[in-house]
Length: 71
Image (cartoon, rainbow, N blue to C red):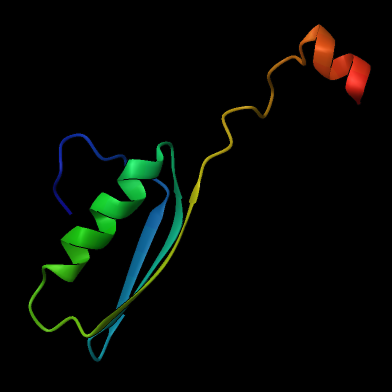
């Protein structure tokens, strides 16, 4: 896949008989849809199962004082 603004380091794509399965994670929601649109534009694609998740950027960050108070 070639798109200069889309990060695909954690993305896998499997194709069988025109059925495309996209799995993994991307840092931004819009990337999920760009990847699906690129796959959809390929000749012979009949169905796409987009199982991409949006990466959790909050992991590892410190909770704010209001988050600490509310659990």
